Amino acid sequence: PFKYREELQKHIEALLKSGVMVKSDTPWVSNIVLVQKKDGGLRPCIDFRKLNEVTVPDHFPLPRLESIMERIGNCNYYSSLDLSSGYLQIRLTERASRKCGVIMEDEIYQMTHMPFGLRNATSAFARVMAHVISGLDECVLAYVDDFLVFTKSPDFDEHLKALRQVFTRLRKYFLKISPKKCIFASREMNFLGYTINATGYTPSIAKVETINNLPAPTTVKEVRQAIGMASFFRKHIQNFSLIVEPLTKLTRKEIEFHWGDEQQQAFDKIKKILTSQPVLVFPDYEKPFHIFTDASLTGQGGALMQKDIENNTYKAIAYCSRTLTISERKWAPVQIELGAIIFSLRQFRPFIYMAEIELHTDHKPLAYLLKKADASPNLARWLIELQNYNIKIVHIAGKENLLADALSRLQNQSEEEKAELEDIAEFPVCFTLPIKDGLIDEHYASVLTLRKENENYAIDIRQEQENDMEAADYIKFIKTGELPEDISPNNQEKFVLNAENLRIIGDILCHKLPNLKPRIFVPSSLRALIFDSFHSSQLGGGHMNLKKTLKKCRKYYWPRMHADILTWTRNCITCQLRHSPNPPYRAEMQMVPVNTLFAKVGLDLAGTIPINTKWQ
Image (tube, rainbow, N blue to C red; front, side, top):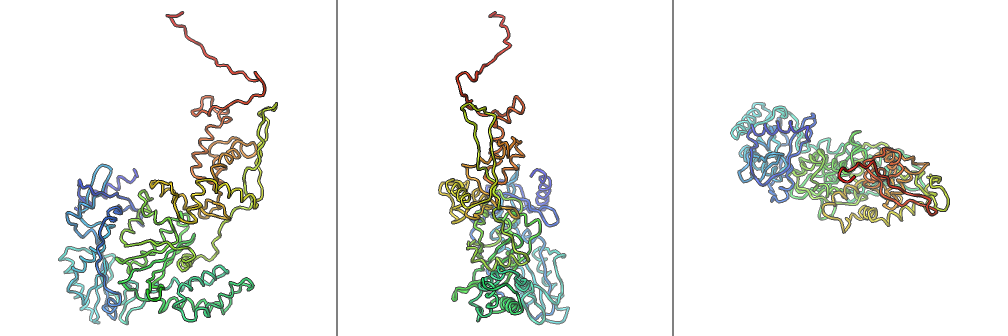
């Protein structure tokens, strides 16, 4: 954007001054995007997705969690160190630097130090850190960009000695730390999802508090969600059916809903089981991780799992969830779903960094979004962040994603209202058109009728949608996930984004935005009829201007509505006659209806004609 060019140029000049970036003529170029920081400032990031697609992955091994805990558990002092802009402290080779080009409006640059977003940046950084601390295994651990200095001796001087050794090694390799982010000589430390101290190590409270904070169900639907969440691990829970029987009873039609002590005890027992062994297990870093995410209109949730190949079951490692802010609830569904993924990745980062990840989601358009080139600033920031993980997206049916779905609704005390079609459906159903035999054209009735939605009306709309090629393509995509066969590759992403807010409600294709009522998708055969009803008819129209007509028509939905209404309004003959005699847009020529011979006579007048001096 133009207003940020000056600020972006200051960032570029700072990078050039520090030697992190230089001018270049490299053919390997990537776009730069501006990401807004929490403090309101801007951070320039480079979109390396195209480069990452052709990069051979570097699989640098990480130590197993069990061995890490054996080393750092039962210590008396801990210190954590954080490098200042750690990645940018690693110099690139000339060959790698040429591939890290950045294109600006009037110049091309290349990075001389390792930027954030490269596929192998994490592996390269971990390899460098392992080399830096080699020989200090008894007092320091480097897990990617996390340094932990630990000493078992109760003597504080021993810990200071260990810190001096680490600082000496950092100084040798010209590495700088950020004092604000460091913690020194603590008796207890949170590291890799565990709380470690002199007595040993235990899972951090945050790992299990998501399940522990689940509120008691208040409706039959919430009871079914709770049972479904627990059913995800039923193979790990002995006597599962007996435990959930008090809850299962409440889902039967003949049973009146009453939440008593019996149900509360069963619910508490389920939560206790879900947050204890063998359900909650240590991660195995030799196996891929599975993350299940989901989002609702009020929250986001995720679960970190690993698959037991022998039993063909998933075992949980950690859970996470959060409530959306008021502004976040206004986001498009695809942004909320992607936000759930980013939130889960950040929460599970100590476990999954540099690991193979399978991301399970019930949101199909995400796969297309990852390839989108012109994403909004927020989405661009998240898409770049995803490049730091080795992710494979796996689509699952919503009914199979019960656990993540329940977590996403954790803070939602009230039922999410699913808006249905309005009882009163506004639709033009009757018009009296002018006839030629003796009646005056101006005297006619154009009637707009409001009537109760009924079965025949719904069938008519459904049939029109099925006969319409555009609506039928969207219906097929929503039901099967298959793109139209005749769609070009350039239009695939646009088609998927348009389908993002479409829903099938009562067998009718509708457009549904968060917190708003659904609008019927109008097939092309009925769009002109809608316009006439809200613009030309005497009862519902009145030949209002573009803005007012568009507001009326937006009770319904069809793609490119604004362009259609604009064209039809400009070409309306009645509007042209009422407005300026020389309008910039002329109506199309039309036949004038007549009833008898010479009923209307047309004359073309010309003049005054100037006299030509040569031809009198």
